[in-house]
Image: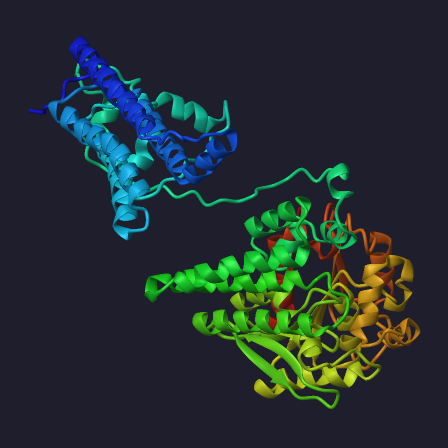
Length: 586
């Protein structure tokens, strides 16, 4: 049996109304008492009266402060009782406690005015005001616990009546969620019982709802983007959602990064801030249960840091530090997961950095995967994972001028690139002598992969994903992309860089002419057209070749990442394992 009178009882409304009127009268008296305590200035002249006003300024200031405090308390009281539909005897006594605090405020104010130099006066004022506020909170808790609130008021009072914070989530009008919310709105269930269904469910229960705040997707209109910096506009143009997710950036992170850039933040700062958020999540994941979470957020943070330096064209100390941090986080995830290891291969031109992904089950072969002028080893780890799952041990390699090899070891692309890549092939061959080796290159790395394959007889199959037949033909009018090709060579002399790229000859004959070749091409690639890919295919020094075109594919087919990876891995596994070549169907 409860002491509450339900809100469908007419007497409850009358009792509440009397309680509110009585409270209003007490508050009015308290405000009046404040004014009665104000000192009246005296003086024999206008100047003397103004001087008296100035002398009593602290008293007037305290009056205004106390008036504001009591007013705020009354507004909160009015708001709360406007949502109370029931009545209980205890509610009356709790309200008297609140009224006691309210009428003590003028007394505490007077003590503070007259004995302001003593600390106890300030403490008394603070205790009275704070206690009065707590009394009102206690009233709200009692009303909620005893079901005295109107059903429609329950969501509004959730924050005040539970010990844990809550943030509400807005639901779009006419969305499926809004229609569902309409169907289960508290108080709509009806019934003969005095207590509503919502009150029965929520009585005595508390819950915490936390809303994770995001900017969310933003319309990237010409008007919005035209106001951004040149770097931000270039980042939005070059790195679509598909391309960022193709580089390992989580979809939600990619959406948030682009949205914040559209709102005016710079590319590097947003990506770094999002990475720091992922790291906080990784650090909070503890114990065995938190291990998968930690691994996932470490990899997300690494991908965001790599994305943060994408728009940096010079190899500054800042860029080197960013990439080193990204690689370290990637290594932490690898160590925790145990599915790959960091490797360094010594060459005459300098160290090569990479990641070795062991084969699952009995190995059927080994493969090297490289990127191009901006997407590097860690960015193409999905291909390595697909190969490893099919029994192909994979070396995700940062070649000369790429990734960690370049930014940590300052090893750039030179005319001696052939010997350097030969050492990478040696690395795999020495691990498992005689095991067949494949080579997969992405973007301009595809051109390098074909050039290596034609010269090294240990390469049993090659995949080109987005390369061209003559990399030196990329014109300076390509802007940022051309600048990145120059940077791969570790020089600011574009003529010297072009000379280096002229030595990358994917159509040249060699000792391994006739190697199996798969060309993967995006039909909507804005960088390498299907016509250019046809020239590459027709000129390749082998008759065992095939091209697969994704009709709407972008550069390196990032927008069909899983299909692309499965296609490459299935074909490479079949060629290295001596299995029938899979047919490619739409």
